[in-house]
Each structure stands twice: as structure tokens, then as C-alpha cells.
Length: 160
Image 1 (cartoon, rainbow, N blue to C red):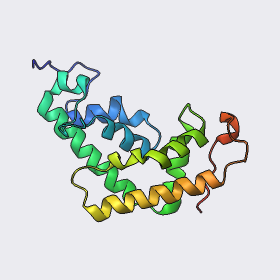
Image 2 (image 1 turned 135 degrees about the horizontal axis):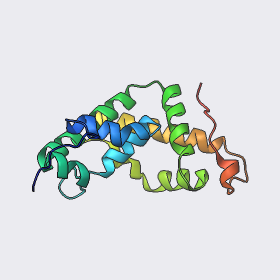
Image 3 (image 1 turned 180 degrees about the vertical axis):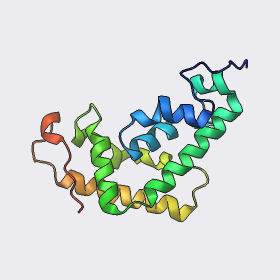
């Protein structure tokens, strides 16, 4: 794949470019974790980002995404429950779908399990899932009874 020289608006490293042009615009750590994990191919585990690959090459792009995924995961894992709750509140507040629908879907499908990087040890992945399930249940239980309306389903930070 051809590599192009960075223009004035691009960073000189894949990591700098990823942060400046993409990740810094995502307001929550959990949102950045979800985004980067979505760039990992489910079949191969290879991370793909078209723009980064064009400028920095496939290998450097994939390596940068993998490193950021690991860093975001462990940073989030090390937050206190109160900070995780606050971060999830920011993340859920940025979504377009009604909160109760999202929370019910997450609890049913456990789709967030895929957010753990491949280097996470089983106990780290378990902690991640257990914390998320507890926080999701807590947030869901704090919703008004009639929360089908997106305006009435904005999360409050229930863990202090």
C-alpha cells in the first residue's frame, strides 16, 4: 500500500494523528475504548483504520490502534466505580438511542465483552464485565418507570 507524506494538518506519528483527529473528539474514555475495539476485525484480531493506513501504513496503523486499545482498557479498568459511572454517564449521554433500550440490549447480548483487548488476562476481563454489568443495572434501576422517551432516559450518575 502506498504511503503518503503527512500534510501540514497531520501529525507525524500514527498515535498523534489518531489522538488529534479522532480520539480527542470522543468525550469519554469508555467511548474511546468502544470506538477502538470496533476497529478490531473479529476474525483475525487485526485493527483496521483506512485513513491511518493510507498515511502511516497498515502495520503501524494496526500497531497504534492495538496499543491505544490496551491503554484505554487498562486505564478504564483502573478507574474507581464512581469514576466509571461518571464516564459511562457521559458515554450514554452521547448516544442517540433511548437509554433503557441500550441498557437492556447490553445486558441481553453482553456485546461489551468484545471491548477487552486480547492481552487482557481472564481475571481482568471478568472484572471489566462484572463492573459494567453492575453499573448498567444500577443506571437502569435509577431510570424513571416511563423511560421510553429519550429525554426522560438521560443517565444520572448513581454511584458516588
